Length: 248
Image (tube, rainbow, N blue to C red):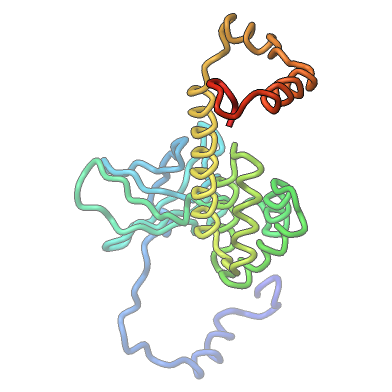
């Protein structure tokens, strides 16, 4: 008698077998899910048989980071220590190759609202920047994280005036894309450099005053009293018109 069910298994089986049906196909038994563990490198890649396969950013957590790998006919399937699938790659036929999934390089630890806020505060007009970023999200909801990260990388170490001009241009023209914003910023950056170069060129063309020039500027032009010219006109009026030297 079974201690839990308080029934005799052999007698139970006689009753249960009345409801069993024959198996018409051969049962395929899958091999063990995890075949082997592999060490993860600092660049979040896993070396397997001379090639490197990418895993998501943040998988590497120290020198003792490992992942479990299962092999199918043409794929490697990667699992974290908890058994969750984190990557799949086609098995490379060559050697020395990097098999990479671009999605693995995305930073996914920050939530979108926080990422958007962190991006907006880099602008002078935070409210206008928020509206711009929200419109990007409406236009490209599936790629908003990539869009925000591109905006962040574009404005890094840039002049705040150039950043604001690019934002104004995109807002006025309804251009809600990180690529359009980047193009606008590059344009205004070039224009600003041209203005600086022209100013420097003009300044270079202006030579400093010499001491002689400074003395000339300080000198005063001789002036005469108006009565001097009045006397000349009086003398001209009293002299004969045909006399040489008279004024005409």
